[in-house]
Image 1: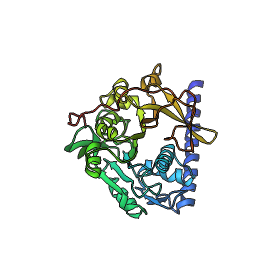
Image 2 (image 1 turned 90 degrees about the vertical axis):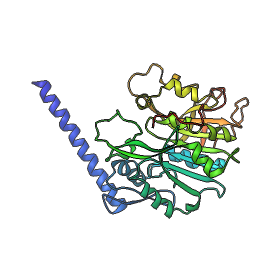
Image 3 (image 1 turned 60 degrees about the vertical axis):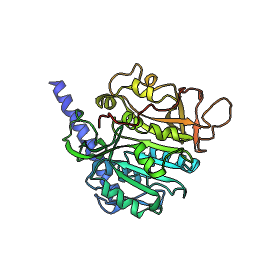
Image 4 (image 1 turned 45 degrees about the vertical axis):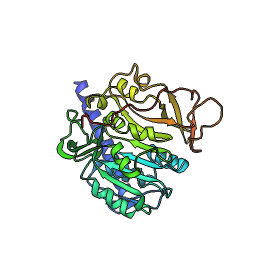
Length: 343
C-alpha cells in the first residue's frame, strides 16, 4: 500500500512541477511577445527576426523561449563566431530548421550562404525570414534531403508537433505519429558546385549538420566540397542510436572523418572551449544506451598543433583545452561522386 501511495505522490509532484513550468513559460511568452503563439521571434542580440510555426513545439521551446530568456544556443555561437573570424567562402547549414543559425548575423559580402532543409512545412518560414534579412541576396535556400545521392524524390518522415524529429528514414518513432512525404534528395557537392563552379573554393568552409542520424550520408555527399576548401570547420550532431537506426555505425563515420581533427565543445566559466577527441569511437566507448553529443571538426590549412601558438582558425571567443595534438591523419571524408545512398 505504501508503495502505491508513494507512486501516486511522486506522480502528483511531477504533475505540479510540470504545471508550474507551463505557467512560467506562458508568462514569459506573453510578456516578451504579447501572445502565447508568436509567429515572428526577434533575436535577443541581433536586429533580425525568425518566422516560426507557433504550433510547432520545437519552435516554441527551442527558439521562442530561448530568445525570450536571452539565451544563445552553442550551435548559434559557433556559427556566428567562426563565420566572423574566418570570413568563409561558403557557409553551409544542413538541417537548417527555422534558420536560427542562418539568420543570426550579417555576412561578409563575398560569402555564399546555403541553407538546406527537407521539411516542406518549414520552407515558407525560412523564405519569409530570408526575405526580411539584411543580407537576403547572399542567402540561398534549398528544399531537399541532403544525402549521398541525387534523386528527384525520396521519403521523409515528419513529426507534426516537433519539427526537430523529422527524419530521412523510418523505424525510430519516439512514440510520435509520423507522416510520410516525398521530397527531392541531393548531395551537398551538387548544390555547392552549382553555386561556386568547379575547382577549389577561394576561402574556408564553415558548416553545421543536424539531420537526426543521417549525418554520415551528408558527409559522404559533401566529400568533394570539403576537399575543395583550404580549411573546413564544422559543427555536427552525433546520436549513436539514430545513426545506427539510419544504417550507419560510429566506426564507419570515423573512417569518413580521416583528415579531420575532432573536438567536443564545452562551456566553462562563460567561455566556449574545445576538448580534443581522438575519435568518435573513443567518445562512445564504454557507454551504454543512447548517446548524444555535438562535435566540432577541423581540416585543412593551419590545423597543425606543433607550437604553443593559438591556432589561426580559432576565434578569440573560443579556447582550446590541453591535448590539442589529438586528431586523425588522412585526407578528409571518403565519398563518391555517384549515389547509392539510403535517403
